[in-house]
Structure formats: structure tokens, C-alpha cells
Length: 453
Ligand code: TRP
Image (cartoon, rainbow, N blue to C red; front, top):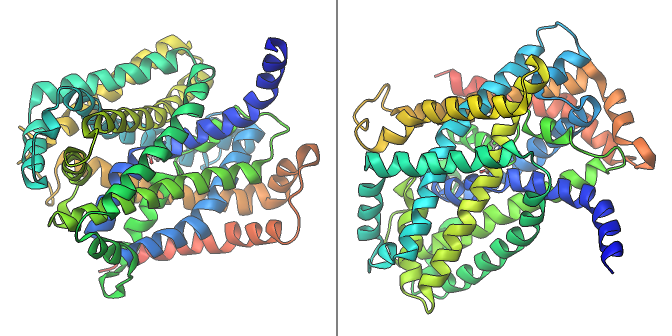
């Protein structure tokens, strides 16, 4: 029995382990925290449709391109571009990716810290003490303005990521994801039924599912595109790095489809939890980053076994954040290990520490640094905006051009079809067309439209 299990683990471990690690990277705060508030701020249903189009036409082909580049080179983004086109300007895209990883994790760790804090506050019952989201929201705002608490939990989150990446990404994490990801889905379904049965829930469903295209502008499309990249962990070589841990036999196309579908399913589900509740409780969907933290605790407070569900939900949210956080850290760490020959331990400690330090002003952006604004945005918002709305789409566009035109779809195709994996008509042609023409042009147009007044 044991031997059989071990054999099976050896076989499945590489296949499933990779899909779970990549899904773990993709499913995170982007799905559960960011997606609902961005949908809320940008008009609901119409935004969701544009987001789905971005996932299908732009995100999916780029994910396959990143996996393929990664498995071919088995390196971090800088090393990957450098191996295929040595000493060319393309290496710059790799550097932009590593920098994006640094930036994103710096504020991601702050929000990750919030989720840790909410686990504790759910355990003590503090977050469930409010009858309406207004009060729960006020509680949240006081909390994120509290310097000591925010920095403490931010450090705890980064410390956890550091501890895991120190030991390498394999092993325990993959097993944990195996249990935790399905549990997350079950809890989300449970919450969805609760939300949908609240009085007035259907207004929220209408907001979420009825497209109103008058709310759509070039800027909104750019935000949808940025969110697609962010949610799928694309545009900065995260999936290049993870693709590098992949066995040569693995089917890259089906892996891509699993990861994309899982990530999208979770985001859509979260919307069905949040918006019915938002409208049922008379809250504005345009609330912003506090949306999940103020609405859900009120839903929990009004349901049977609410405290238990709240604790489990915030633990899962924290875990989803950790499995994404480690993927961001791993990219920057892999760069220092591969390119500069650092020892893993040294790379993780120094990089992790530096990212934590750079994240401190983001952590304080809703407290003592709240009034320090440039162009109407605080430090946190600037780092997020720069990385998510500029670095990721640009990185994705150049990755598509690189794979489509420089390395060539011919070579990519060969890598994808290794070990009798089939990538035939019409999918291969479809992907080739998307990655060479549609993806770079679409990202380019959205970009120009955004920059022109
Ligand atoms: N995709 C993750 C989320 O949705 C965040 C993330 C992890 C990410 N790795 C990334 C975003 C790489 C952009 C690039 O929460």
C-alpha cells in the first residue's frame, strides 16, 4: 500500500504538483480581494465581460508562451531571455519582470498581512461584532491605519514566505495546495448560497451580470487587462520561472487550460459572493480596497456558525496569499541564484528583507502616510499602478513578441510537442495567430489609447 502510494506520488507529484503550484500562484488576493473591488469601481457586468475577453485572447496565449519559455530554458526571466538571445536588449524584459516581482510583493505582503490579522480578529470575534458593513468598514479603516499592527502582520507574512522559499517550493506546499484549494472552493460555494439568499441580493446579481457599456473607457479596458495579467501571474516571468520546474513530459497546453480555468472560476465565484451581499446590505460597490474586509464579516456575523466560517475563510485567504507571495519571491530569488550565483539562503534572506523594507511605506499608506500623495495617489497605489498597469502588460506584450517573432513559434511548437504531446490543428494555428498578431497589437492599442488624452 505504502509503496504503491509512493510510486503514485512520484508520478503524479510532478504533474499535479506543477498545476497546483501554478494555480497556487495564480489564485490569490488578486481573485478574492482585488477582483471584486475593481469590478465594483468599474461598472460591474461590462467590466467582467472585458476581463473575460482579456483572459481568453491575451492571458491564455501568454501563459502558454511563458510556460514554454520556462521549460525550454529552466531559468529565471533574465536568464531565459539571455539564453535564447544572449546579450541582446531582450534581457531588459527579464529585468523588468524581476523588478515587477519585487514591487508587487512589496505591497502584496502588506495586504497579506491584513489577511493574517483578520484570522486573529476572527478568532477573537472582533470582526464579527458589527451589525452593518459601515461599522465593519470603519473598524477595517482604523486597523489599516494602525502603524504597529500593520507592520507587525506585514513582517509575519513576509517571514512566512521567506521561511517557505528558504526550503524550496517543492514538497509540503504542493500537498497543502491539494487540500486547501478545493476547500477554498467549497467555502466559496457555501458563502455564495448565503449571499444569494439575502434580501435584495438580486440587485447585486444584476449589477454583476448585466453589462452597461457606457461605463467603459480606454482606461477601464487597461485596468481589465492589468487585472487579467495580475490574476494569472503573467507578464513578469513568474510562469517562466515555474515552468522551469516542470518535467519534460508534461503537457503544457492542458496545464495552461487548467490553471486559467481554475483562476477564472474562483474570481467569478467571489463576485457572486460579494455583490449580492453588497447590495443586500445597502453598501456602495465602489467602496475600494476595503470591500472584502468590510462586507464579508457582516455576512459571517449574520449566519449560523458564522465565526467558524469566518476563521476558516480568512485562513484560506491567507493561504491563497502565501502561495502567491512565494511565487513572487521565488522569481526574484531565482534571478540572484541563477544569474549572480548566490546561495539560496543568502538570496532569500536579503531579497525578502529588502522587499519587506520597500513595502513599509505601502503599509503606512492608509495611516501616517495617507496624506503623502503624488498625482492623487498614495505610495501603495503608485507601486500597484506602476507594476500592475504598466510593467505587467508591457512585459506580456514583449514576451508575446519574443516568442512569436524572435524565438519563433516553430521552436516553441517543438518544445510544446515534446514527448508525444500533441498540439495540432486548429489549436496550434490559433495560438500562433494570437501570440504573433492579436496579443501584441491588442495590448499595444490599449496602451496607446491610455497614453493619448
Ligand atoms: N496572481 C496572484 C493573485 O491573483 C498574484 C501574483 C502572484 C502575481 N505572482 C504574480 C501577479 C506574478 C503578477 C505577476 O493574487
